[in-house]
Each structure stands twice: as structure tokens, then as C-alpha cells.
Image 1 (tube, helix red, strand yellow):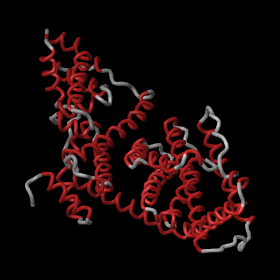
Image 2 (image 1 turned 180 degrees about the horizontal axis):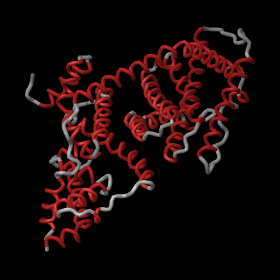
Image 3 (image 1 turned 90 degrees about the horizontal axis):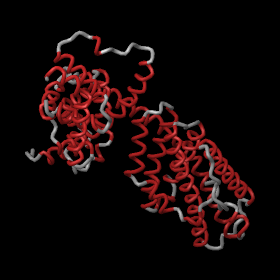
Length: 254
Length: 186
């Protein structure tokens, strides 16, 4: 028997391979409707509970941002330099260790930001002109934004690495939650006045929300991981982040 | 309504995005049979096929705003279906691999069957054993009758790659069944 004859024989025998029965159209349609309804309800519930806390957090972040900007204007190097990373992070063997370190750095930066905020009295900065105040605010926003974007890039990279190794732990869940919360604050703030930045924040929001959902569920469903990967690639999130973050001014905590 | 399939697709998508439930149902009715058949062929199980079909349409409706019309709606839906089925089957295989240790593995050689039945059983096992790259192409082309153009569009590969994979898949099946088929036919 030659190859063609065998192929013909196999083609005939293969027609019975996993022969489908009748399509349960109505059953599947009902399930689709039910599942979509459940997912919509879940999303709307999340939205209702999210916004009050986002509002409070947005106000807090705005205060930190303005204070940082004023502080940078009044004093030079030491304080501002302290919020800039001095050296690259050492390479670690374990992804979990690296994530621990990254989160510790983030926490340290946040603490420093709070210290700066508390060190400046409420009326501490001289606002000589409105233009100067505007510039200060813009600078502060920029600083907070860069810090956040760099942190997000680090988290997404850490997540991808951890997901590949199946080592996702609670730290990533908490980290993604914090970053998602900040992203949404920034989306609702003047930081998204810039249309390009607005788009970047929206893309980041989607990816962080997917990551948060993935790690919170803890089911390690490859379908969900595939969705996240597609979102990252299709929306060019990493590329956009890297092109937005100036390489020489990566803020601390990243 | 236009006879141009692409325009029909776009109009249907537009109506779905506008929130018309009838349009969503029409989209579902137009494609569910082929999608179900394909994922059933890949899964070999009615419950899994229903799950994969359900997930395919949920994803499609969620991402309908991302449908650009570069390919036909059918190709776009098939791409989602194949991705859902392959990912789902990976998970199922992991679970089955664990249970195979405690369950008895069927012994094909021990079953007294006719040549045709035996050939089919062996062939189906050999198809199951094809790699993730080769099996969808073989199933779509030789079992379900898709063209290489349709397969290429669905899997996002060049037509030449689809042909090469079918060639490889057939060669592996010949190799797996050569001795058996040769003994009976020679």
C-alpha cells in the first residue's frame, strides 16, 4: 500500500473521529445569556463599591503629588534625589524574592512620599503666582505618573515571569490591586488631560484588572492568561510604558 | 441587506454593538453549528464541546468592538473557538494525566474487533496523539473539510504552513499505523 492509498484509507476512517451529535443550540444559548448576565452584574457591583474609595484615594494622591512638587521647587538635590532609584536592582534567582524586593521598594517610596507630605505645612509653600502653582502641580503629576508607570511595568513583567513558572503568590495580587487603584485615580484626575496618557492609563487599567482577577481567582486558567497576554501585546502596553518612562529618571520604588 | 458577506458581517456586528438582542441571536444562529462541530471534533466530548462553544460566543460578544472586518466573522469566531478549545484541552489533559495513573488504560490490542473498527480505533488514538500544531490542521482539513485558506485564516498561519502541517500530520499517522495497515492489506 503506497502513501496515497494509506492517506485515502485514513481519510475515510477519520470521518468518524469524534463524531458530533446534534447541537444543543437552546441549551448553550441559555447558558451564554446567564453567564453574560452574571458577569455584567459582577462588573456593576465592583463599580459601585470602587468609586467612593477611589475618590478618597485620588484626593490623597493629589495632595502627595502637589506637596512633592512644591518640595522639589523649594529644596534641591537631597530630598528629590532620594525619590530616584540610585542603582539597578540586583538579580535574584527566585522570582518570589524579586517580587518581595520590588514591593518593599514600592512601600519605601510611598513612605518617603508621605514623609515629604507631612514635612511640609499646609500653607508651607509660597504661591507667588498662579502660573508657578500650575507648573508645580504639573511637575508633581508628572513625578507621580512616572513612578506609577514604572512600577506598573515592573509588576507586569514580574507577573508574566511568575505566571510562566506557576509561582504567583499573594504579593502579586496585592501589588496589582494597589496599582490598579492608583491607575483609576489617575484616570479620574487631571493627569489624563493628555489624550495619549489617557489612552495609556485605560490600557493599563484593563491589563491590571485582568491580572488582579487572574491572581485573585487563583485557578491558573491558561485561557485567562492567554487573554492577558493578548491584551498586553495587542494594546502595546509594555512598549507604550517604556516609551513614556524616561530611562534616566526611573523613580524610586521601582 | 447586501449580498456581500463582509458587509453582512459588518451590519450584523454593528447591530450587536448597538445592543440589539435579535442581532446577537442571529449571529449565534449563523455560526453555532460549525463552531460546535469543530470544537466537538477537537474535544470528543459533548459537555466540553458545549462549554467551549459557550465560552467562544461569550468572548466574541465581549470583544465584538475589536472585530475590524479584516477577515470574515466566521474566521474570527473560529480563531476564538480554536484558541478556547486548545487551551481547554490542555487543562483537560493535565487532569486526565493525573487520573490515568489510577484508572485502567484501555488495551486496544486485546479487543476482538473487525479490521475497520480496529483501524478506526487505532487511527483515532493516533490523531489524539498528534501535536497541538498538527491536530487542528488535520481535524479541520481531513475530518471537517475546511480549505487551507480557511485553516490559515483561523490559525493565523500562512497557507503554505497549513499544507506543510497537514503533510506532517498524515506522515505521522502513516508511521503510527503502517505496520497494522500493512499486515491486513498486504
